[in-house]
Length: 587
Image 1 (cartoon, rainbow, N blue to C red):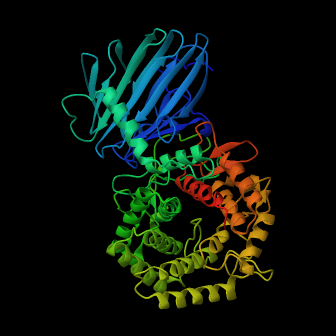
Image 2 (cartoon, rainbow, N blue to C red; image 1 turned 30 degrees about the vertical axis):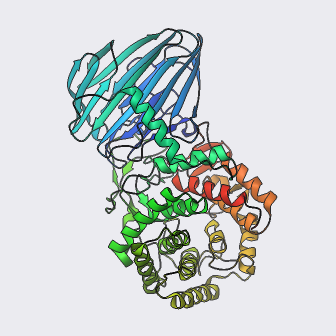
């Protein structure tokens, strides 16, 4: 591999080669050429400042000059990334992080360059382009190696030291640095971007690194009693990195990355899905990790108290309604279009209430539920009572139907909530759960004994593994056992799991393997006492990633490539839950 032509935006890479830097309030996607290809500021769903990931010109790249091969790794239990390049002269590294925890207004991006064992030549390019590539760097000034400027309404400061040059091309300003490092030398680069005026003095790199290291050590548990402890710690770090100070956890750091090339399935996931937040909270509860559990409970509780039976499937990190989807004037990631906003804002998803009830019940079992949480529990139960017969968009967010998964998830949530110490009407909730299960069984149980997708769709679906896992029906119920058997027969191939059958095409031709489903299979098999098979599924699924070990939503089993937005929070959440439960000897 060679560095790209000077002053040209980096080309896109396959998704498995991108890593993530995250501080809770926003995230940076870093490519193998040291290119920060995606960053929104000041928060996750703000307009981008770096956007080459979806065809823009804005980027921040640190790359060796000449031929090199790439590698990298995260520091254990953190979102501190090490890019590592082996050049013809020796080894070059860039230690990279967003200062953690992040400030809601100002990001601090740290890059520490090091020539490990030989002299190194690097080229650094800083080319910010605000508001999805429409605003150039302006009002540029330099004093003693510190550069300042404006990118639209944002303030920018770059502490890079001597040797930086300024270039202007068609109104776009770029700062470049050709850097020569002797063997053993290092150089710190500190970039600040804020929606408020910056403080008078730039931050000190050593202090920022020290604070970030110690904060990550406090944020991530040891996971010593779980399977694949190091990988599980990374999944915890991902979820903590995606969770804001306002408690919302975004579903992914990116927008518009295609699930299937030229198939029109491109979505903006930089928002908080209630379902995903509950999955993360349930995983944290299983691991007894109170901080992540508390964040999930607080966000979901606030939304239930505010919106009751009109709960939206997803929100911005500040709890606002998501804007409608609109197209951007950018080429997009190859094979995809590009957009911001999400049509999910107009949907009703019944299962979100059931997942919320599961989350609040899990919190109550650990004495992490307060009066507001119990009030939210009552409101969620009342919403199920009122709306369970309505068609909804379901877990896969498609057409409105009486989805079996949605109704059984609501029933499982009611049963879990009824078992809590301060449940307001436990007997009524149990009675309603029984009614929902009986009605669903009467209309959506296949003649062969397994749950079918809906009364008018006799096929099986990966989501139908959840009712047995979440207590809607017992684990040994014949319907639970038959559904798992049918699912394994119809929707798995060579150790990869799929959501549902789209049409008559072979499974891998319709869409990618759905990684969430692979961990659900592991959990379902473990629940049935098939521990060897469960661990095989766990290991196969956790290997479906790239070198940074981040999970996307889907995985192309034929090309062994990641598909969709990254990193997908709910996959990391189910990985944690599976790592906890599969490590337990009794099921």
